[in-house]
Image 1 (cartoon, one colour):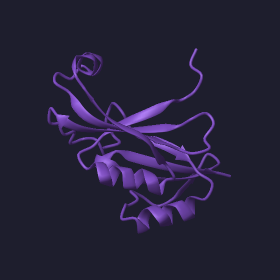
Image 2: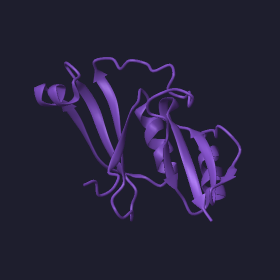
Image 3: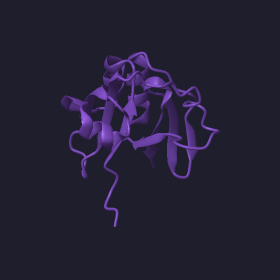
Image 4: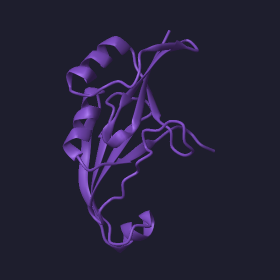
Length: 144
């Protein structure tokens, strides 16, 4: 039986910008390694993989919450031109609950990242979509 959400992994070209985005949301770097070789190639299904693998954690979260970032060194990562289109099949977005949506949104925007829409009040939550790293949509939710 599933116990809880563990992590999400995002592949990026700009590792520094991805780290900066998640740092603004409160994530801290836990570890950074390079994954490569036949074990990882077989596991990931990516021949000849060599990638920076960065684990970011949200301090104090129970259970532990991780965002893992992959920065491919080999092979070159393929683009996903539809990644920011929420009207398609497949991965849509990830959402993080927060305590102070307005404060967090101000911090993210001051850090050079944009929201995709105005804040929406829906199902006992205030919600907003952000343009995350490499076009991945990140949602913030403040429950009330």
